[in-house]
Length: 352
Picture 1 (cartoon, rainbow, N blue to C red):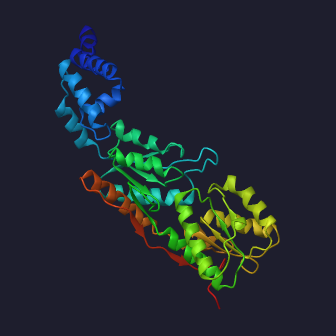
Picture 2 (cartoon, rainbow, N blue to C red):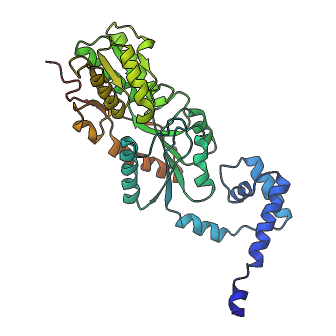
Picture 3 (cartoon, rainbow, N blue to C red):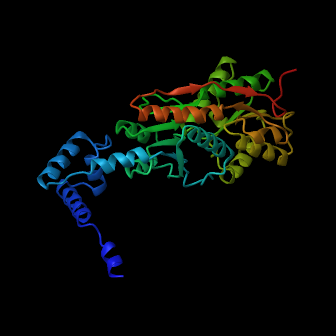
């Protein structure tokens, strides 16, 4: 028993190293984790801080265990896949689009010999996604969606965090993104409704989100091409989460009986709109034709089956993983925009 107790004592060298790191952090005015990153040469710490930490480490005769560090890096085959959540709407990870794209990423990581760490952060604090890299738990981050903080993503890119984002290419973008052609998607959906003879078109989706903003750009472009006025009153900034969107969608449609066509920024929003229209005694597509977005498998089994903009989710999963691994190899891949197309079903059928 005495031998077991003796063997369980902490390594004095290890204890001394921890004390020295805390001393360095105190003298440098930074956190212990920042000291650790600086001594490991992380690009997430600015050059001035790295130099200050290195000087203090030398003065305290601190030596980093490079062999152990390299072994940890070689053994780490984990990528953090982060799905932000809106604290107000609490959009669930069981959302059909999230499930589809996370599944595609998981398949691609498995094919390349990597593991996935699935995590969530508050959509108001996207920069928290960096903590899995900072802590050494993951090599890099794949973030699902830009949400409302494009600036935070640019800040992470400036710090050279290995990061790829599912989303649309935005002005002054510094980070790598992979996403469908949102402008084209909005244009195709609106053009189709116009070809069906619909002229009072409503747009349903929160344009504070970059992807939805781009879809609205395409929607407005198609209206202008057809000589139809863009009416802000016919836009509803509905969230993607069904529980939060149901009431606003129902109230909006009740207040706008003149609407004869809907461009919805997700298939779930399109399904909620179809339910609300039926409750109001309006028929789809006879009275109101509607188009969804994403072309999730369930879109084909709705009542009526949804016309929708198809996003290449399976291909996107592989491309997101490829872009991240290229960054880890020292490359700087730029934004990639994937083609989309319109899948026609009964909610807005092909013109006769």
